[in-house]
Length: 305
Image (cartoon, rainbow, N blue to C red; front, side):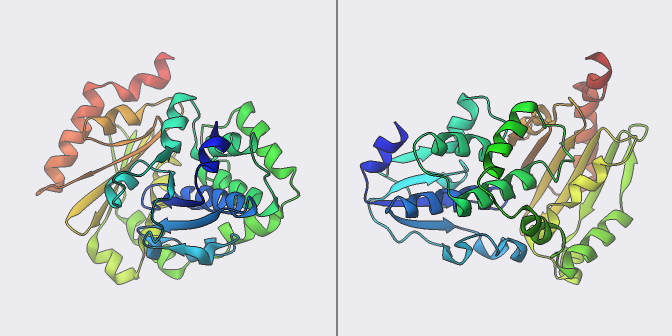
């Protein structure tokens, strides 16, 4: 079915947004490489190209990423439903990988994309490199609770393509920017604990972002440090950007932070979610957020399972 849809078109546009999902870059580039090898005319587009971290520039065809759609009448493949609102996709046929992810109960975008394309197309070394990079970014280098036997089975299929694992690891772990370390340091200094140490809250202010010179991509790892504390069950990071505040949530073990994010119009996954909000008073908002955590009894989920 996938191949039939793609064969209807001479041109294909692959869209992704880096804003909320670090692994989306690898997924989009994997699809781009697969379809280029299939002799399709392909373009890869991200509306926030400037925010993609430089340490991902080792991925095959990274330099081909653009910030606008040039193709007319192309099939649209997107890795993130937010792309619908970011580009004019009127009257375009769309392959929504986000839909497949939900309908097939896959945790991660890289997993559903790999399974879909592997059944109909050749996954070469370049595409496998992109998929494996997405896998590592998604599981936070084996630090998340979403690891299952099936995930390892799929990742072993990717490794079977003889990719350079050490090169991928080097680029992801040893090519961080100085600004990312500066923003991490200033943010950790302001970390506060709530609910008897079970909730950590960090605020990334506009002022500190400006002082550190940090890009958006430098901010995404901060939330993972809060959840690493032994007593913490929910980590919350507020990032002040433009006229809005982006809130990232991480839950430990089986805590469903997605249910919390949905109360504020957010989305994501069970233990990693986010939402955007405009508020006048951060302290008032945080009190409301913590009250919701208590009323939903999220901090009791680990004990009751």
